[in-house]
Image (cartoon, rainbow over all chains, first blue to last red; front, side, top):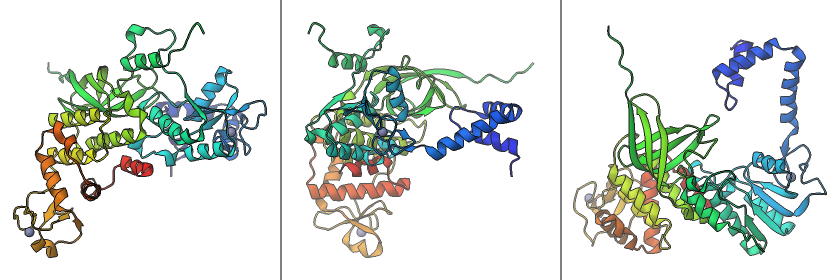
Length: 198
Length: 258
Ligand SMILES: [Zn+2]
Ligand SMILES: [Zn+2]
């Protein structure tokens, strides 16, 4: 049996990006800081684990059956933005620009890891749209081989529905230099061009 | 005064095909490459998770790159310093089936080749089949030729020229079966002595014999009948499963798309 300090260090060291050294530093801090502060952290962890589940509609994190976005009547339910992870959803939310709803896949098709459509929430997306037709599905998976393949698969699955399916633009990052962009980025930037005088 | 010699840092460069990457810690990636000069290598790409500045899209699977890396012999992972894209195949991602078929080839190479064992012929085979993926003419059955030739290059070649029991040469008038455990065809006279035989018609055997001899660029011309392809696929899958002890993960995803 590990003593309590060793046990705490070992638990902290399992967190992403935390090595043995950082885990030790954090553990010693938690032991030396005011008792309430350490207990608040432990309660916050327990509380989040108890109360957070996946939204029944979009698979974002939720406290109720529906997440705050799906439950918000001022969000535009006729537009669904498909993302790989809840983290990607948060990034788009932080822009404050998007007023539609989301669908979180919880990954993308990665054959090397045995992750195919069945391991993602793709069937639920198709089902959701069949029940409540929408005006547009925006696919915002990552612009990687696997993200693009997932986008192609979803677009294919929605083809027969006749719903407008769009893909987020890919291309040259603001503030970067065309001379340093690689050929794939440039190809995408040219494909994703838009009219300026219309 | 004697001092311990410092570990030699070699700066190397080779053409390579990117097999896969995965995140490592907060900001790095581990990259598995199949290089022309050094065989399969695992390298660390510092900062590749956080920023695409250094490597761009050069670390996407299937990409044909020239990789520049520092290798401290016998000490941990080699470090990828930069890469230059020779050919990229982003169109593969327009069709999920091609991505899955392609990943299956990458997974076979990643699984079957020992690290740091030079196989330039495997590099050329992989490069040829990866570039085939973006061709209109690509068909899933071409994977059988990839499997067959890869197995042969790595010493797992199934014996299709003679009976693995009595060594008698293949004869068209006989009906053969295939033994995964014995690694080849079994003639009618020997079939009683071997358990777990798979059906394998003479048409398929002869097609595979041809595929073993042919120049690689000509392989796409060979055509299977659906029945031949099905038994050939089953035979090669069982053969592979026997040698690696499991089924490739990308094969399970392929089944989902069927
Ligand atoms: Zn929701
Ligand atoms: Zn025999």
